[in-house]
Image (cartoon, rainbow, N blue to C red):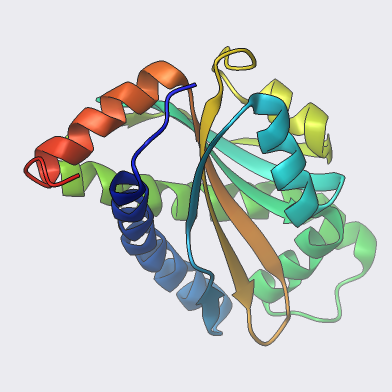
Length: 206
């Protein structure tokens, strides 16, 4: 399995921090409250280890919005929520605590797909701008189910034998206590391509 150097991981984490900072500003404006971000984590893992890592954070039953991207590097960006938090985020978005559960459920897919589209585009667009590369984004896809089923059915890379690069960052709405997780998953070939981009951007310093 390819390993990034600690300097490369630190640099990638900082770039993710910049991208997610812009994305969280968009989310904060949408919900009208402060969004707190965690320190980014960057690891190289097997696909199964990555799924277990994600499951430990989000739980076994999750709601996800996925956006595949391709260009100078490629992979899948996923916005993940514990299943019990997704409806609370919808409440925060529409700013109405009185809507019954069945109406919230009807609005859930459309509302969360739009949130995912805004956050994932802001984060990936920031990375593309930093590297001065074009990235093409697929349309966002919404899904619900077990963590393992959602991750395996929503990632485009054949990565189980070679491993994946897992970038993750957690965010939380301070008032409503809703938490979510941004995850980027890339295969080995994309890791090589990203490593070259990091060396190019930092002038060989990583």
